[in-house]
Length: 42
Image (cartoon, rainbow, N blue to C red):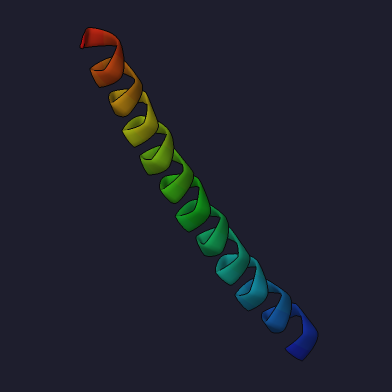
């Protein structure tokens, strides 16, 4: 029982971390894309 709960907790923590990393990557990618298009428009 205790192990199962621990697994669930670590799973939610793990998925939260992944979501954070994906959001950061998306933000970085969008910023990079914006910079690229800004340079291309110049």
